[in-house]
Length: 272
Image (tube, rainbow, N blue to C red; front, side, top):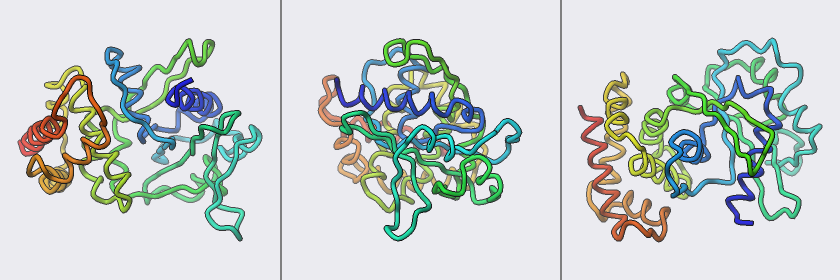
């Protein structure tokens, strides 16, 4: 079995296990482009490199009347492993799911905005799980769409609707925040996800129109500045990151040049 298939099986199991909580969660991390291509666009065979983290965001705006137990309680009953951050402290933890042979694993991480109350977090997630609060994160949770997640091979009898950001919002948020990353490897993945959407979105004009009407003037200026810094030349750091993350390509000989052209076009769109 391929590594991506092992990870996908784990991903589907996490979604199955969190079924009751999906109305309150938005998938926001590196699995999002994978869902775009497989379940939203449905016509691309070149899948993006994904991650070993599943990132769920929540806004704190949905009522939690239907929640009978926290996510921590649910996953503990299902015997998820836990990653601890300090040897002398039991909490907070990040839930961890491993396959039977422990050759693949997924961390389940949760993110919200700085304004969400502690009581909301404790009711939904549980105080035992680490929840990251990020500035600018509210943009990513705007106008989420639902993707019908069904895979007859991985989970024959299961179907879910999972919330994700629209592709233009996901792309814009990455352009706005990738320079905030302290980890260069994560920064490179963010840049690659932008490139992936620019390259494989089946309706480029629609994507550009959606970006053009976004009403975030200050954030647009910052995103453009970030992109200018990393994509001013074919030899710029951003183009090299995309080339490295993409790897060998059967369809393009010069990934670096292609990335440069697409990002310069994106800068033009955001400057409209």
